[in-house]
Image (cartoon, rainbow, N blue to C red):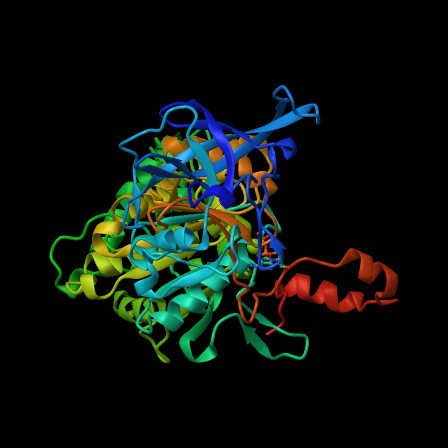
Length: 553
Ligand SMILES: Nc1ncnc2c1ncn2[C@@H]1O[C@H](COP(=O)(O)OP(=O)(O)O)[C@@H](O)[C@H]1O
Ligand SMILES: [Mg+2]
């Protein structure tokens, strides 16, 4: 008798390079494929649970991906039996240490065993020294799962899951533990819905992170002026690429921006100024140039100039935005009206302003929808440029957390935001080299830029039931782990399948609850429809709307 008999649950029936199949023991053969640990039934044989496969000296670790019913073997009375499909993950050496990759495959007939707690421990011991635990293994809740913070934050991560699956809670959990474990962490959170810092009805500001380590900034107070934008981002902002005269608008804009940047910065003494240089120019003057060109006539007003009338749409759009106070933080800044205000802005951004902070929450909820992509790209680019030009970038790595990333880093093919997309893709591709990590959070992976997702090395996949999104994620993860995507639709709230560099092996994890939790934006219809208010102050609603101030400050 081998010492394993108590854990034996089946035998291998099929061996392929990336997958294994086994038949589970049947009731008639003595036991059901379930064992109990400390009085609790564990998940043995369930999708997402681990098993070991033993044959002679070979000992593999595999994860179960599916379980199917098959006709019973002869002699058993039940009529059906069960078969499981598995993905081999790595080998457990004779010393009990887990290693990725498989050198020796078993043959059919090999024994399939439930995994013991010691074996589980040997797998998760890998990143334990860094002390960054973020949840417990779903297969054995007594085992903490530790991630490798270097890989997680330095090599980009994606947090994917449908609405309500627990993405925002996951972000809060990961960041809370990050700043606790790493007191010199530098994190910028793009908060689209005011979930990480919010004002309660009583007027008190609450925060999902320790207030001593966090700085809250309303994007509108920050002022992210137009003159910081690169030329192609300015095109995204000012030109509608669907206009008939879009190419003339772009060509003329190029000349104007170059001239204006040169002109207003002659005395900066920085030599060559490119069309992308982050130096001040006047939007009013730019408007003037376009207006003049649009009107210009020759031959004493009898003939139209070559550009006359081409810029009607451009002028109308720019004028209406310049008059709309919602865009003031971008187009009509009050404080940032000269090139030398840039250092202040950067300080605020990376948490070196007053007070210093590890986490900077940038609240985007008051930024109008149509300029969000341009503004977020600006924030991303400032973080990137900061470290790109920072001689000590190696000592000052930054993480940029992009909530609801699909809404401003769209898939290729969206023509309007070309410049913006290019900016975000550059961070995804090159950020790693300059110590800028990205965490993209989305409920629609399918709508998010492929280039950005493909650069992610760790995937925290929460519940995801949409088949299109599942297929899409399947193509992103390493080939050997693709079948695990089927598990995504069976995950519970706050439960994730974590794959990639930051975990020793693909792991089904029940994530810790963040403390405090972020502000859930969901509205409780049932409760409010049972006991909600009888009347509302509609004048106040109208007033807020007119003043474009939801929060009333
Ligand atoms: N780790 C967790 N443990 C327990 N419950 C969770 C966890 N994460 C999320 N939840 C539950 O799921 C709800 C939705 O989470 P949330 O992060 O707002 O989802 P999402 O951002 O994906 O829309 C939360 O209000 C909470 O009740
Ligand atoms: Mg959310």
